Every structure is written in C-alpha cells, then in structure tokens.
Image (cartoon, rainbow, N blue to C red; front, side, top):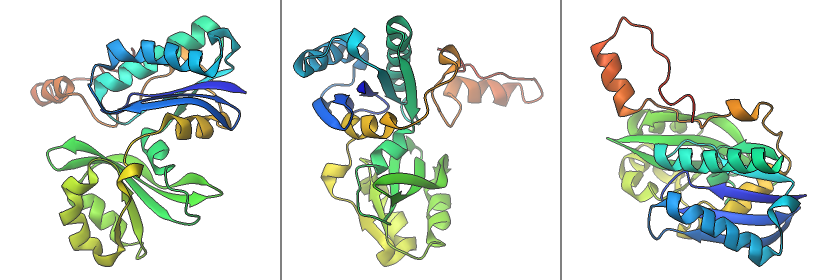
Length: 241
C-alpha cells in the first residue's frame, strides 16, 4: 500500500510518503507557519523524491486534530481534496495519538500535550501496546490543573511529549512527583512517517465529504456568540470546511 501522510495540526509541518512500512520520503519542518503556501509544494517534492505519481497512491492519511484551527483546516481540506480527486481512501488519525506514537517503549504511558492557551491543554493519555498508542484517557481540551488530577490516579511513570511540555512542566510535576517523565526533545515533533504507519492499518473514512477535524473546543467567535445568546440553539460554525 502506497500512502501519503500529512500533519499540519500545529506549528510543525510534516509530510511523508510510504510504501507499506517502507518510508520512502519524509520531511518535518518548524520554520514558518504558512502551511497554506508550503504544504502543496512539499507534497509534490516528497512524491517526486519517492518516485511515486499521485495516481499511484492508495491512501491519504491526515492528522485530524486537535490543534490549530487554521492548520487543521488546511491539512484536512488538502487531504480530502486529494482523496476525492484521486479516488483514494482517506484516514484521519488523532494528532495527539500520532505524537504519542513517537514513543515505542512497550507498556509505557504517554501523555502528548499541545498548548491550548490560558493554562489549558489539548491532551490525551495513551499506552504503548504492540508498538501502537492505545487510548487510555480520551483526547480532551482541559485545564492543566484538571489534567494533573486525572493523571495522578495512575500512580506510574508517564512520559510527556510535545512542545508545550516545558511550559507546563512545573504544575504537572508538582502533582505527579517522580511519575512525571520528560520525553526526549526529539520526540516533541509530530512525524508524518509515524502518522502514516498508524494510518496504514486504520479504518478509512466512510463518508469523505462529511469528514471534519476534531477541534475539541469552540472557536472564539462561537464562545462569544454563546455568551451573548445563551438560550438560542447553536450549530457549530466549523462543522464544515
């Protein structure tokens, strides 16, 4: 199976091309934040390096969130467009799960973190089983305090990964004590190659056009609207791309 993997869910941009478990080309960059300009050229470059034409692909795999609203929309829209125009299957993988997949120690608990601002996190808890991250606590938008209290119940070492870890290390380690384990910095960046390996065996999206990112929280516009209209019905503004 030949597949293209895309992760634009946060500041790093990562693209990979795989043939089954063979990684043919992969690039991850943290320079610049304009994925709308850099993503398509990077995809073209990666396919060329891998010696694969777009029509030769069997599957598109995309990081489906949580993360940056803009980044998620760019990545998911690009993936959906490619899957539709090339008539390929599409797979969405949790952005947090993909980051947790950087850790390969069997049985290890892993807590990937993204900064959600104002002392809030996008976070999940995973255990590595058969080289794959398996969800223990669901991905969530949560305060640092609440997240620490959820984790302390496990009473075992938890490896934290993500560029937000150092920012929130103090309050987390104050609660978890020696069970707070800082992952190596090289594991903080999402790797589309890991995403592709996970997406290779995952179930594809059944309804392509209905697939949307997993934002996990309201946009600022939605929050402000709800504050002013607490009694009115409300459909998500970001349901469709």
